[in-house]
Length: 314
Ligand code: FES
Image 1 (cartoon, helix red, strand yellow):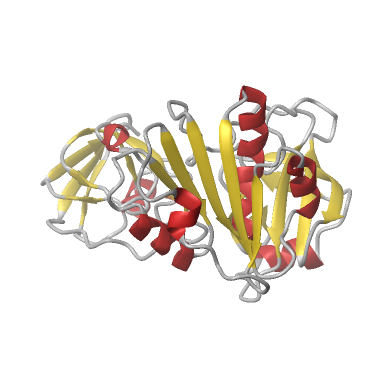
Image 2 (tube, helix red, strand yellow):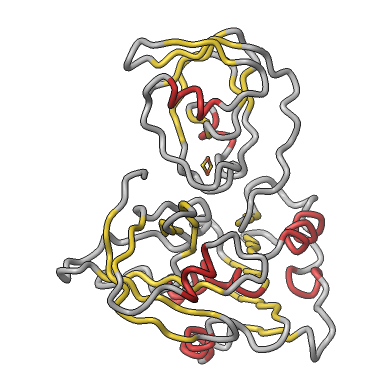
């Protein structure tokens, strides 16, 4: 199992349809590290593996971390375990939080669009926006009663939350939620099912680079690795090296070379397997690294290589 800490499930709250909110604490009451709004952690599900969940509590609260888990009809094991097996007082293994969906600090206005349980990272962000006195709006599209009702209720008094129950009213258009075009200072965020993310990407395709952010639940199909070749992979720290065929996993190869690289989604969306590269020409296919960060780092679970040799700092 990758690096983790043990926490205790201090409270389980039924919080909206088929949704359980877990309040996690250190067993001895130690404060937990402060995490960035938009961060997620991996919950290690026995016999299944790590499952990523966004932290949905106020990020300045350090005596607990909160996640909300909706029971998925097609659960791969994570949500069913949380709903059927987990009780208050149980110990759980979690990773340290990672933030691949940060607040755009330079923006002067923030519009967030969530689909169902995709609201979770925005609940943490909304607390932070309020603290900063920022200009923000959250649109939550939900079929029927929304998840995380109690957190939404706490934030309702801000008057900045728009809940669209699509069983009662027509689904709002993207233009109505985001505006006709990118306004100066505006940053738009989206988290929800894949079809919603596709709609958001389409609606904002003409916006300036860096003015939109997307958080995926599940890894989307990988883009083609055009130009990928067979290459020699070298660990600079250990001095070990091996040949990796085009199309083979760099993560698997690094582990075969003895590198301890963490992984969770194995689809380029969670940020767990980040590695610094030193020489060569990686082909990036992840959805988390910025163009600037890609100049020095890669996500080993999805990266390929376009040069004969790649040296990584591992
Ligand atoms: S394991 Fe999630 S990005 Fe690689």
